[in-house]
Length: 210
Image 1 (cartoon, rainbow, N blue to C red):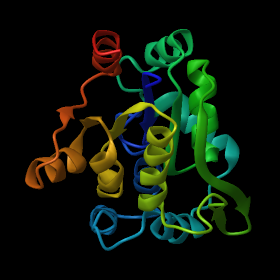
Image 2 (image 1 turned 45 degrees about the vertical axis):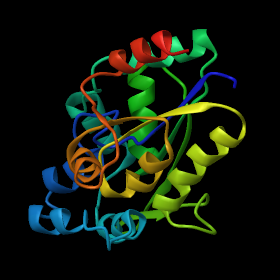
Image 3 (image 1 turned 180 degrees about the vertical axis):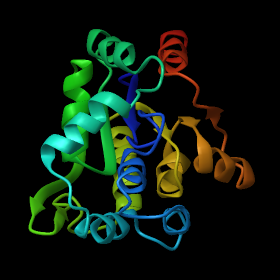
């Protein structure tokens, strides 16, 4: 075994709130009922994002400013990135979110992370989103494939998530930290998961179980 690796969701996991949802609600491009329905296991996150942002008249500058002012990271995130770099722990993010808000978030915190996000571009009337890494599978399967890939390479994998689309990946991981809907799903379906409170707890776990 090569030790530990880590895979994480972004919205509501690394951030305290789902940034896409927060943007859509704050600027009036969606409502709570529509967003709540998007978390059904029957709905593909990537499809919802494409539809929801198609009519979102937001500029890159507005989104970056929103991230700087309103988006908060979960406790210990930046320190966890630095810990992984120093300890040689591969860490990557697989997300249905978009680069237009992820990039300013990482810049704000002064970190660079291997990541998979939707590629978003401002167009007339809204934002067009493409997911070049989802050519052969949906987001839920892709997240699971990243865990599977690291395990096949000889790593034990810690997974972090908060939504239904994280469930398949959580089922494959060696250690799961879950928040929100994912924690509820794991408990209902018998997958061992620790509550995701801070990334510092994961760093301590890896140190003790290396």
